[in-house]
Length: 111
View 1 (cartoon, rainbow, N blue to C red):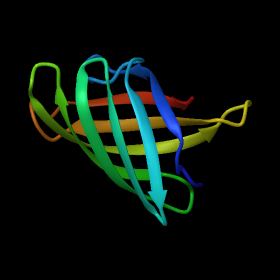
View 2 (view 1 turned 60 degrees about the vertical axis):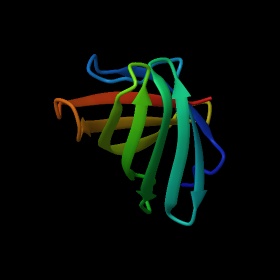
View 3 (view 1 turned 30 degrees about the horizontal axis):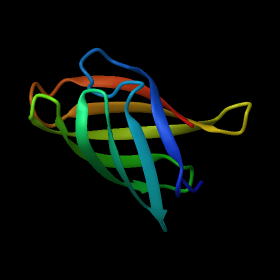
View 4 (view 1 turned 45 degrees about the vertical axis):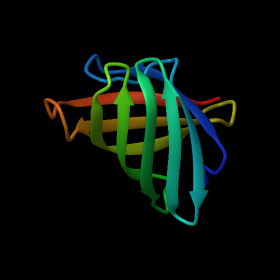
């Protein structure tokens, strides 16, 4: 699976997360290396880097500056699902590596 030049928006997130439907991710992929710049909602600017395996699963690390001016970091594992319309839905399990180190889940869909 290749995520190059695809855009995603969250459709759900745990209460302790910072992404929302206003957050837009723009994925770039070279080989199995995935990067994304993102922003919107509670996030002023964010960046992620990850590795994509042969099944399209993503193992990523992220860092972002929120609207409070805080630098937040975390880890995330994403599992892809191909929806009926052919677009990708990502099922994510994540954990903050800053702040309270809490865990959460989110779902993103290709726009």
